[in-house]
Amino acid sequence: MKLLEVQNNQLFSIDAIHFLEKDEFRNTVSELIQNGNRMIALTPVDKSDPRKIIAVIADSSSSMISVVGGDFSNGKLEFESWANEFPQTHYFECELSENYNYVPVNHPWLRPVRKQNVILENKPYQFFKLEGEEVHEVAVGPIHAGVIEPGHFRFQCHGELVYNLEINLGYQHRGVEKLFLQANPNQRIILSESIAGDTTIGNTFAHCSAIESLSHTQLGLRAEIIRTITAEIERIAMHLSGLGGLANDIGFALPASSYGRLRTLAINSLASICGSRFGRGLFIYGGVRFDLNDEIKNIVINNLKIIQNDVQQINEYLFSSVGALSRFEETGIVRKDLAQSVGLVGLAARSSGLEEDARIHFPYSAYRYNPISMITLSTGDVFARARLRAMEIEEALRFIFDQVENLPQGEIKSEVRNVAANSGVISIIEGWRGEIAHIVFTDQNRNLMNYKIKDPSFNNWYGLSLALRETAISDFPLCNKSFDLSYAGHDL
Image (cartoon, rainbow, N blue to C red; front, side, top):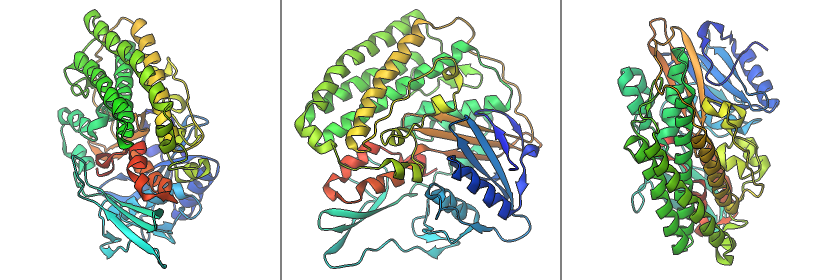
């Protein structure tokens, strides 16, 4: 097979990509996915000239990433869809079609990604319809009660049972990827912090790693460990928030408020490090802006020890409650085979028994030297997604205590040179939701010519649709919270 194989955060020359004619391109991608690999991007190399595209395929077993080029310069922008055989490619094909007018021939369900009502140059899109006696439709959103971002959920029901849920997003046209191409280097970190407000550190980690790879920047180990410590604090904070939301959705007030109290301690720990409870301002190209002195370390450790002690008791209270378990168990199930088929990532994948964790399969930064444990559950229900959060909090606390205790000496900032010309890099980070990918290409003048972001929610929104099948519509809020996906991360 003619393809380029790289590792996570490995700089490569665009000239090293083999651009194949469309049939060979399609067959090569098919063979890779057939062998158990997973698509993480389908995008042009140059955003202004979409006739040359790449498929980025990840192989978790070998920690390698395949870059397959397709050249559509001579002929129509169309190819035979993979989605009938490999459902995981479905949404990637829809996005390529929507953004660049490609036609995935015989696609089983070409639908909007961020344009709601049209496909393929403004052709009207029709929502899925279920017909029959006593079938009814329930439409929720895009405007929701309370402080929540816009998303439209359309249920096809028979009585209380949901037979199909179609999720329509894209109401926020922020143009983040385009802004990266227009921004100066000083603005780009601020942009990366704003991709998804609850994943500030995850996205900034991916962005800085990509630029540092493009500029041949080598970080000091102390800076790398400080980055991973804060990434794990963000994971703890957001998992506590998710557990609190789940408890609240079943009317269990005591654990709901208790998880909220502990989340405050976690984000206050980030504030003690960098002045922002969400980690803004910490990352700079070449390292971090703030060090961990003894005073800060003591604050962080004391806060996390309170969390460690208290969360154990709260978890025991929540997961021993008959009422809570009756709502969690066997609700919103996503089977392992379906999760793998549609390409779920992160916590949603691991709760269905899939071993998917970029910290382990595509190790980066300090995770290359300090491994994290793989944790999975097999039931694929709300209980698994809740319980896995609790288990990942425990593992993150163990990791942080170990790293703080053994924090090496050294510089926290390294010199950063200019980015390489005519080059690319794929940066994969395990955010608290799952796999975040930032894919960057530069032209001959060292300017960015494509910046592609793939949030874990891009993979996992369809998992929520699967979880609702043959589930009572009244369980939708609980299932939705158990995935806890990002509207902003999707609506780039």
